[in-house]
Length: 547
Image (cartoon, rainbow, N blue to C red; front, side):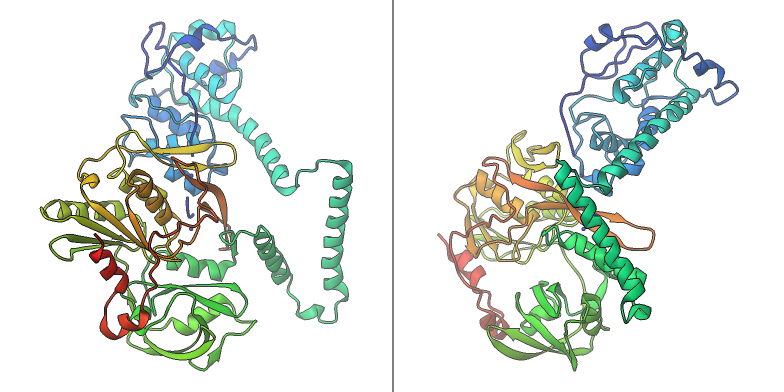
């Protein structure tokens, strides 16, 4: 989820002159000013058309905020995950978000420089900056002296917006055409595409005009199912179209505030409702449900080909303290399991001292607060003088926010050393450590527990720790192999489209995690029966006993 969501680049080279002085606001070279070709285009309307408007002075903050607003129409929510290298900007400020947007659309490179947000520019510097960034000619030789003689004001931003909005309409049209029409590489392909398009339109019209059941076939349903198939045909299980009602359920599931059995589930095929993994400490886990269990019935209601995921979940999702009888298919056997529903509470990090030498840290999901909770666990660890081993439990952790796992890895990786790289279509984002020195992990033996639903951000965490601490021992089985990044587009009818925009790679080996499993050093199957009967975790016990 977009909601996950974005992004980063090359070298920054801009410098602004204030009036006729050499004052600068960025740590970069002013060389490009010497090579500016001044356009002869007469833009005296800068001073004529904007008379009697707002002449309030503006600063750099106002300028970048205005520039970012030009691109709102094409920036997904995932831009928020860009880790800016720009300094002197508060991460919680609107300016930081505006700079992230400009980095996302490739207007600004993501390079380290100091930004004095309250500094003011001359009108000339503002127009030359716009010319440099947006590739438009706005200054004539006749206006240079006048523009250098005054500070930039809100009139200037209004004028720039008018000019850039014209370009935006043209760009929107190009983007729309690019998205609606596939790239055609030859006349034969072009002809074939037109034929297929005609066939599609004819099939639709024929169903509506001549099918025996045409009166009961909804136009909306036809279009909606076609949209689903478009998403499915990417052959990417993480690219999904959610109709309005299913999207509502999907969004509600993200806030972790619900009452039911406490399992991640999926329905990749009609009628196959699969347990992805029970949530730690949930009714599912307590009742003995296992990942890969297939739910055949919920009470007397059978999962059929016509049963949607939403409908199946509604049969299981009822108030706490009530019981649901699940018919489960597992290892060629049909089982009956009773589960008492409850309110599901997700705690991102749990930690405790197991004994005099072992410290246990369990990470359930890489959600918004996990880096802070993780730091708390390390502070508790630091107080323990005799601990020799740290056991990280990432079983059934299917991932989360990349910025959170990146922040956590800064505790392991030396300062300025790379942790991971995210590659997009036309650029890539490199993550580097800030070198937190709270804990020296080289003094500890590290053991990691993983399973088949250890995925995404969890895999980034494990692979990077293993890169920098090769003696780390991984226990149980291969990980899930999700190494992709998704974002979400929302539509006016309440539906949404979740799709893949990038892939993750390990830094040292540049290994793509997608479809690449993390193989355990020690395979040890989890003993569910022993855990259910005696509350004994055989994998954790093995981790404790390792020398």
